Structure formats: C-alpha cells, structure tokens
Amino acid sequence: MDKIVSLAKRRGFIFQSSEVYGGQGGAWDYGPLGVELKNNLKRAWWRANVLQRPDMVGLDAAILMHPRTWEASGHVGHFTDPMIDCRACKHRFRADHLVTGVAPTAKGDAVRFSADRGTEADVLAGLRAAAKKAGTSVDEGQVRVAALHGPDAHLVGPSTNAPCPTCGEVALTEPRQFNLMFKTFVGPVEEAAAQVYLRPETAQGIFVNFANVVTSMRRKLPFGIAQIGKAFRNEITPGNFTFRSREFEQMEIEFFCKPGTDDEWHQRWMNDRMAWYTNLGIDASRLRLRPHDPDELAHYAKGTSDIEYFFPMGWSELEGIANRTDYDLKQHIEFSGQSLTYFDDETGEHLVPYVIEPSAGADRAALAFLLDAYHEEEVPAGEGKTETRVVLKFHPDVAPVKVAVLPLSRNEKLTPTAQQVYANLLRGLRDCVVQYDDSQSIGRRYRRQDEIGTPYCVTVDFETVESDQAVTIRDRDSMTQERVAIADLVPALRQKLGWDG
Ligand code: ATP
Image (cartoon, rainbow, N blue to C red):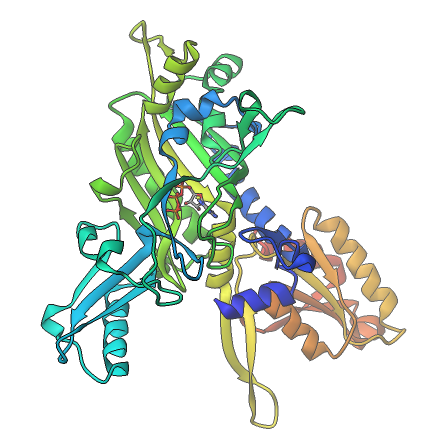
C-alpha cells in the first residue's frame, strides 16, 4: 500500500485533504489524474448499468433529505458502530475490530495481547513475543483468542483486562454505540427541529423517488434505478488510505422486481457485477464473492454477498449485493403515509416490489484498480544491464491519460509537426486526456507515462518531418513500436483504444 500512496501523491492521483493545515482525517482530494481515473470508472459503470441496459434508468437525488427518511430506513436506530476508548492514550477503536488474547505462561502468570484488526496468528505471535520479553514462554495449549464482539466476548472484555493495542495500558472503556450519521442544521437556528443528516448512503434517494420514476417513465417491473453520488459516514477509524473514508462516493443500483423472482435477479446481478470488474481488467484471482453469514446480515436483508478484493490488508469489501426484500418501500409507505406500491396489469393487483441492491464504492474501486494495475518489471537498460520500470497496466477505458505525444527532443524542426499531431489528437480523440510532453530524455518520458498507465505514446522524430510523415506508436505493456502515417493516426488509436470495431 505504501508504494501506491506515494505514487498517488507524486503523480497527482490522490492527495490528503487540507494538507497545508495538517490534513483532515478520512477525507481525500483527487488530483488531475485521480479525477480522470475516478470519472472513467464512474462513466464505465454508468455505461454498463444504465446506457447499455433497457431495464435501467438513472437518478441524481439530493444529499440533504427529510430526516424522517432516516427514521424509516432504520439508520437513526441502527446505523451504529461499537466504539471503545483507551482512557490512557485516548486512542479510539471499533470494538468489532479488536482482537485480543490471553495465555498462561511457564512462570505461572499470564500474558495478554490486543490488536486493532488482525488474525488469530497475529495474536498468537503477539502473545509469544510478550512472554519472551518477560523471560518466559506461553502455555500453547491454554491460549484463548477472541474478537471483543465475538461469541467469546466475555473472555476478553475490559473486565478481563484486555490491554490497549496502542499503548498497552489496561484502560479500555466498555463499548458504546456510536451513530455514524453526520448531523447538520438547515436554516439559521441550530435547534432539534432544524436538524438534518448528510446521507450515509445514496439508496434512500432512490426508494423515495420510486413512484415518481414509475409514473414519469411509465416503467414496468422488473426495472432498476442507478445513482452515483456522495455519501458521508462519521467512521470511528478511517484508514487504509481511501478504503475507509468519511466522505466517499457510492455507485448504487436498486433493482425492483416481483416477489418470487428476487433470488434469480440476485444471482444475475452478482454475475453481472463480477464480470464488470474483470472486463475492465481486474485480476480474477484477486476477486471473490463472499456470502454473508446469517449473523452478519443487515436488518433489512434476506441475503447479501460481498464482492471482495484482495487488498494489501487482506480480503475486503469492494461492493455489497443485497436482497433488500420489500423492506425499504414498506417502511417509507408506513412513515410517509404515501402509496409506493406498483400496479400489476397482469394480475390487476397492487404489490410492493422486492429489491436487489448492488452497492459499490467509487473510491474503493479506484483504489482497487490502482493496486491491481501496479507492476514492477525488470527491463533492459543497455550495455547488458537492467532497470526496474514501474508500470500501471490500466485497461484503456480506465487509464487517466489515453495517449501522450512525445517529440524526440525539443529541436525546432520537430516542434511544429508534434504540435500539429497533438492538435489532431485533441480533436480526433475527444472526451479523453491526451498529453504533450517534450521535457527531458525520451526514455525518462516513456517511464513517466508508464508510471501513470498511459496505454500509448506517439513519438515524432526526424524521419517524421524529413521523409515519411509517419510517427511511432509505442505500446505500454509490450513496449513494441509501430510506425503509422500521421493521416491514419486517429483511426489507428481509436481502434487500439477499443472505441471502433
Ligand atoms: P464496511 O463493512 O467496509 O464498513 P459497509 O458494508 O458498511 O462497508 P455498505 O453500506 O454496503 O458498506 O456500502 C456499500 C459500498 O460503499 C461499500 O461496498 C464500499 O465500496 C462503499 N463504502 C462504504 N463505506 C465506505 C467508506 N467509509 N469509505 C469508502 N467507501 C465506503
């Protein structure tokens, strides 16, 4: 992860929010390349899920919603995480992330160890290290490891003296429930009646507009509504770079279908969403679909499977695909008193549709695509030597810069033609970023473009201007070069980028 964080900053993908003031925790700014990367992902998602499907439409609902929305959805009552503080070092943890263990030692006393996220093996290693430091060893047969909120919670709660993972003091508080919704006020008076929430998910904006879309678009079941937008969660422990942020973007679909057809649609959406990632180049061996255990399911869900990516911290959720049943629409019917039912022409009855929800994060996707694209390769550097090249092997649809025009040097004979080629590409490859770069040696410029994942570099050399009116196209992955007439350059690149044919 460290390499990606550093590349992301150095090359203008992602910066810490408000860095000049020391940073704002859990918030990130996308730089010139990051915004292109994220826009490309959002565009690819919209294309696959709205433009190319006859059964989907789009929506862009407001972030500020009527506060009753969040009572109906269950967020006011349930959208909480258990929080634990250390009284000694003031560090804060999510209780359900803490793992901790205790083991008797050969000396007859006990050692304890805690970690903020970790596996059983991490705790065992920590216990062994603690015993070794005390000049003894653990009784391996008597080790007890538990998550603070697991079935064995009673073994390890504060009453049994779990140490703080950060400072080691035995000073943890009991877990307290903490609501993750950000609150703010509408209008000038900060009173309870004026309080609203920043939406913690985009989904509810879709549910409350269900009847509007059915009526205005004359939609029949099954059909879905897609939305991309910001969501806010006051996460107790943001971290792992952009993976867990307090402000992030979601790409959500609510797919409405007749009760009884929901399981089939759930399966179809799981297949479609897995294929979306692999079609855009994500390594299938780093992607998996994990069904939730029954005790993990959200209060509204009949079944949920997460699409997980193998991030540096281990398998973690990229997207959740839930069968939300008719829960949300029924809740909004009850809380609003409005009719959000669907009239079925075939049976002549009103029904409340079931809902399948594929809910993805644009920021987690951008992080996964960055990590997946990152490669270090040994390449020849002349005189029998090799050097390491860093290359982001993005799918062309995902790459922030599609083509770079690189004159061999700043020689005045080359510049006018190179500028002309650049201008042609700006016109011929509209809607994507084409860069022009004539600084430093051509080798260093290729490396720079490799490092930001540009699929094709177009090189203008002396032959171009003196003899053949042709340029070379260099392929990022194979590093092979192909000579193409300037007149054929736009169609050749469009084809390589997968835009035509
Ligand atoms: P987690 O268990 O990681 O907190 P979640 O199950 O609460 O996630 P959902 O409510 O299912 O997440 O949200 C759908 C998607 O929104 C997630 O799969 C993820 O891609 C994205 N997402 C959720 N929370 C965050 C966050 N704090 N930062 C970035 N993306 C997020």
